[in-house]
Length: 244
Length: 307
Image (cartoon, helix red, strand yellow):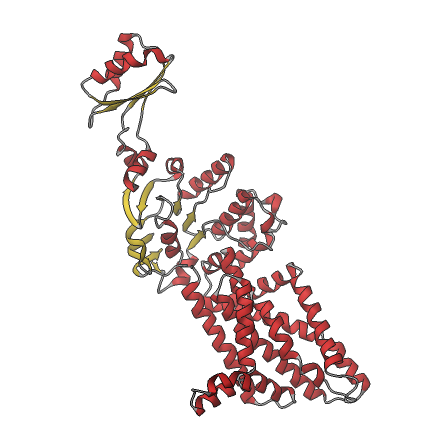
């Protein structure tokens, strides 16, 4: 597992070797704050909390996270560097984990840079800082879930644009699994237990319960399993298709 | 020791590599030859553990590539086709990354980095990103990462492709230098390379091994083996000489090239025709610029067995 760290550091450095990292962080910060102030009515609500800020994270991530994850594997396959990486003495799992954690740390960094808003809300009133911390944790788990999905989609294709679109679509389905928009597609033919199972996969439901400040082990377990499943799927996909 | 047994790779209905069995021992430099699409790269990728064989087995230094892939990969230096790298990394950063993955540490790491930088003359480009490098430098960076951990086995897919003649010469010198204590497999379609570096050549066509021999042994299969070639000072004597040479009992066939006034006499099987031809040239007063005995033409052998 020593190799995970080596691959992680290389990946993380490569984000900052191109303007991509800076552009991503800038856009994330601008949009996250703009949504909180204009759509969320941060001031108008007259409440010292970060609800209007966190409520838009799922929708922000839906488009920004696949932009980070699309290149994870598609680019390695396109440039052929995957052949170089996979013929070093590293396992597929180490490579998948190294790349995933690099992307996750990168988004965590972007998320951490929203701290001025947290300072602002503490300056304006007396917010429940425990709830804010829980919401940050929920947001981070949500980003991890989207990244794991994106990693798997990136392993499916050599084309980063295709990886982006697949990432958005699959993330969207998981985000809204508990809502009529997705459930209606199954309601006509699927039995009730399956419908309930699908509904329970909803990222949004799990995110919202953590975001409200309730850290339930079941929600964390859900995110951990979602991430685990999609990273495993990434490894299986790569094993089958890495040389195509 | 590299060992393959009945190595086979199928892509759907297409059999890319078909029942390939060979062994390579220490001190051998094996040249892997074949037309494009013959299965050279697929075979090398299976040896390097990048492509999984459909059936058959392969091992590197006794480590099976299926059951002990990490040990096999640790004993191996591999240059993939086209020498891919991470474009946004500097050469220095890239080599440091590979050194880390190869678990090189401390003094040995510094010594090995210096060694490959010096031998592949990467000094001037160390701080350049890989995407800005010329094809030649990129190939040399690829070679550097393959040998950085001083592996007992090297598998190099077209190591001199895209290099200029000087760089080719350097890379061949490097391979010859390492050949003494390593097992090296290179693929190439430059036949002169086989003579320059290989102790053995395997020719592969449509996924199958069609020849496995020393370069000299392969050349001996040529119909030009022991042929006598002469070049005339002027084309005028060519026609008369042709008739006289063709009349010699041991000569099977005569080929004439008007363009450079050259006559080539092919012997009957096993015959040595040089003395007879030389004597004839002296007797008839032929004005020669050149007279030499051919060892055989590899390109002709290559075409014959892969056609």
